[in-house]
Amino acid sequence: MNERDHVINAVLLGVGVGVILDPSMTFGTLVSVVVVTGPVVLGALLPDLDTSFGTHRKTLHNFLTLGVVAAFPLFLDNLHWVWLGVYTHYTLDLLGNVRGLAFLYPHPKEYDVPFGVTVSSRWATPVTLVVTAFDLAVAALVVHFPRFLPVVTADRIDRLARGVRLDLADIVPGVLVDILALVL
Ligand SMILES: [Zn+2]
Image (cartoon, rainbow, N blue to C red; front, side):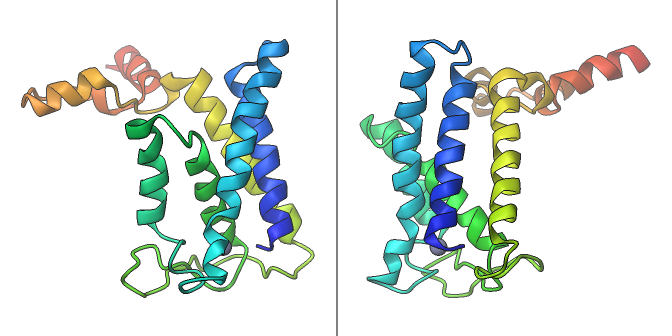
């Protein structure tokens, strides 16, 4: 996608996630929106810096870059939410161009999905909006309806590490466990 669509996507995603995290529609919601949107927009602009140095669609379009920005807040309590901007940039580049991304860089091979629209196409912005809506739906699910997702909790990771076998309820979404309990 072009820079304009990346910015549209990042602003909408940041505002949306901010509201999802604090849907009270109070001053707290405004703070939440500002806290999330700023770093997401910066993160969405980050990957294309490799047009100026390195190799475009390789140097900063890979899992290593995403991993570094995702790990940064965990270890240094800084750069929160930048990972979301980088992630959403990759999603749009995958769908918004006929060219792929070198996800495994320094391995130079570029990976792509067999569909997508060209940057200059009139569908570029509509596709951007659809991707944004999808990401927001996933975010809302994670934050407010985790029972519909397989949830990785500290307790489960600890049990795995201690070699305790996880049962069915640990690896499928809670809502499925409820349905299975009714059927079985
Ligand atoms: Zn890009």
